[in-house]
Length: 229
Image (tube, rainbow, N blue to C red; front, side, top):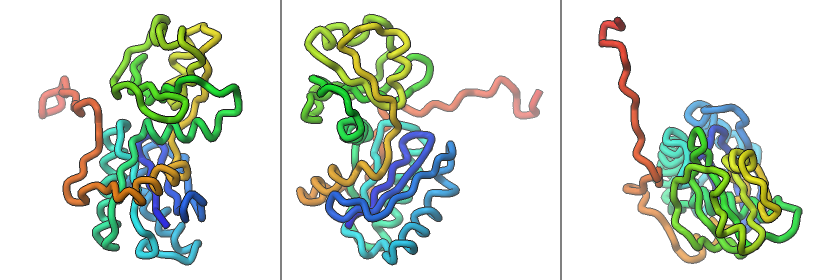
């Protein structure tokens, strides 16, 4: 069994899986509630299932890119659970998760390529290109979208754009090869990747793992002085 934790977006979720079968899961459909509600929700999930963290072989957590605060909360929680239970930590790339989730949810024609997109403000997204077997074939990069984005890729076949950032692209593109599946990453779709990584002993260093932010976190400078004037 593996506990999976997803906190890369505004909403957060967790799931307990046995192999690729989901035993139980929870979704906190409230923005920025990772720090206040996720740990109690996981505790309640274990109690309801009659299990504890020590029954799990590992903890899997979304490793980014995504929300700076969300990723830090999720990784910190996962580390604490791993330390307490003496079990390994598995990192799951957020874009990898969105691709697996999209392939399971999308009911249209099979795409030739998949492009997961994470909203990064205005018309920017974090994205990468994957083939139809969920293998990443391009770098994970930020991209400012416009009507010419992915022109070459769309000329090669059907492209499924997915994730919480794809609606922005849908608003500026008109191409018959462009398919869309807006979705946000959820922990219950992490089971397949987490199991594969567990069987391969592909573990993170519990003490030193850091989320993949892609961009440095910047704190805006206040225009007021320290007196509030």
